[in-house]
Image (cartoon, rainbow, N blue to C red; front, side, top):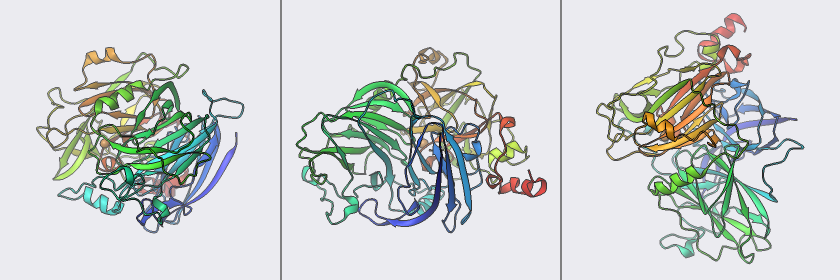
Length: 549
Ligand code: C2O
Ligand code: CU
């Protein structure tokens, strides 16, 4: 195993992601940030310098469990203090498993601002993947707003509330087409993208006929749930969130923010032309055009547009289609299976609320706010009053009707923690509900830091005790992100075996910003020496000067 060293500088720069020039957050002058490529059991060392002039920064390595290095998880106020302007923080962690991952800012709405990139871990030398392929394509998916993230954040915390609205563009590897289409000749009412503007010409991915390609796909969207299609081609899903799944052939696939997949594609179509890669919005009425890219069959020119129209995306609110895709994702034989004995069940009700007139999201009626002292440090040093000491609720009231807006829409803010017994097995039931307005319930992709969980099942309406009988304990997918569908529940199981303080939250960035998350902690006594740079704020800063830990 190798140690791979990176020197990164986070900064703001001009870029033209979607035909329109804008300020984006990038790394070493690049947007999206550089791809990290490593082999399983390598150590990654990223010396991260914050070159933003007026705000802190952190970077989260999404899907990497940070076993033994919880301080390198890159969550501001949870695992570390934000890195101040012109300061450097060294992330050092092991990538213990092969898979498709990504990294992103985890402070304010910096992910939405463009701070992200791919992290790909190959099998260790001498090991083999579970499937064969001849080449690879990497797709990092995101969504993009023309309004700055500062405008967006002010709107979210204003009264009256101002929602960020739908994205102007979807991006594939940082590129999209705003207000124009590469397929204009097949679409009425939209202009062709200006050929002189290279930025919106879309990416072309070159392939040879009659080969098998592994397409790695990761979504770091701030909001959008996505559907991906490749004209005329089937995709065989083989990996989800860094774990192998039973191969399943599909014509189109859903990808929620925080998820990653690998699919195999066989280039068995007519080699005389190119094909569309099309990315569209799901689960919210789309006001954003699909992003298009080109699958280029060599020796055709990569600039040659496909002769067929782009594939038609499934109807945005065809939830049955989405559920059927989610239910097809099952673990490959050999994946760890869940323990049968469960020590604790935590039911988390997801609601939209009001707190003195401001619109928030809350979990069991507590809307998460981030404390000035990161949880990991205050737990490790046993600091009093660094967070709310009372225990957050394990369930919600028997007479709460998840199908209707809440009778009392108020909630409170909190910095509470779910303390998990080290090595215990925990079931989490994520319960969706109606939002503030009648007849509205949204999709929320939940992501757990520091662990994978088994997705035991999805159900409709309020979770009931007898639903336990429907849990899949045989081959549940082992993942780090799982979605809850409108008015439904999702059941997860994980083992609390990674000492640290871990975020568990909706991966829709404005939702997290509005409080949609909780914090788990386990095995704090077993946490090793936290680097002092991770503690240089809030109450841990004074500890540093008093005690030189
Ligand atoms: Cu990719 Cu806490 O997020
Ligand atoms: Cu959400």
